[in-house]
Length: 518
Image (cartoon, rainbow, N blue to C red):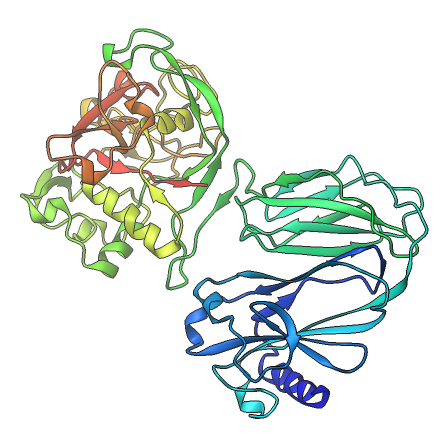
């Protein structure tokens, strides 16, 4: 058996040099004394269980005598040529099996080696030959002593702390006098358990998933190998820092819109300054969870990718078109074809896309969700105002006085939407033409009205913090738009100002900005 296992192992290494192991054991100490407890788990790390058509999971332990015991559903037993039934485990990837759970007793001293591998269903790997193997061979070894440890266990390490960062968690704890090493344990987001032996009292756990929880605890190990009781557990979540700009990858390897991490917080929503409209009342506190928001308004180039990939027809194309400025001379034409296809926009990918309805913006968000595996949607009205204010309580994020130095607005009335150092805007300006607010968001004031996912109500009664899903709305449902546009006056582009429209309406003043759940 030993020669066969070695042969299989060499074959596994040769064929899986660059592959993740489908099977792995928890690690063990080199030596256990009488009275100590041993727990051995076998972890199935299947990413694509469907690639195994019919397999059995074989688990065996080589005893100090050289004899073999094989794991069955009823525990270890002398070898029986019947298939060892574990096949149901393949229905769930990353499943854990408790292989051994016992206290060391006197008389079992010696070396033990545990093995596990997938075998072709119904085949005996001892007699059928190498072709029966279907995975790596997992191994773990330890030695049991026939002696008891006559020492007092070390105290549990205390003051275990965790500091979360981007894709990493830094763990520290107080040193224990007499400890030769420490064992750090953690539970992965999928529930599997890992551990690591360390000589120091800190560890940077890196290459982690953001926005998922990891659970940690630590023990002290004496010079004789006796492990202390565990410390208290601590839960930590690595995450992108506030203000971080990131882009999710699409299915073809290209990148999605630039998103900014917005910190969680509570703010006063509504017309704090006074002088606004009645639908901006009452002023009330709203709490917003951490989320990400588009750094810019949705652009022509980004929306064009969606249209080309899906053949999507917008409400403008399915209906009677939309008025757009085609020649930049204040002459408005009604076009049947959507503006990301007409000649005026063909080379202006960094312009915000206009004339998109709530349906169109929601369809783009759903496509982006499918492409990235992350949850994109339009922001709620509460999220929008919180992000647009960026911690301020003034009319605009820069203060209480409107200024063409910070926003593109008023062009329809006075033709003077001016970006510093540029010609006058009489329509939309390219995204990022003005300075961002303190959250790092551009054009939250002016340029285009931005759709939200919240249903309109006046006065505020709670819908501003909710999304009305498309399946639960109809063509008469009114959705909130925020931010004003290139044609709005100063009153309309305040952080608190609200507009609304039906979900099929498209307008030369309307665009969108996405949010993403973190």
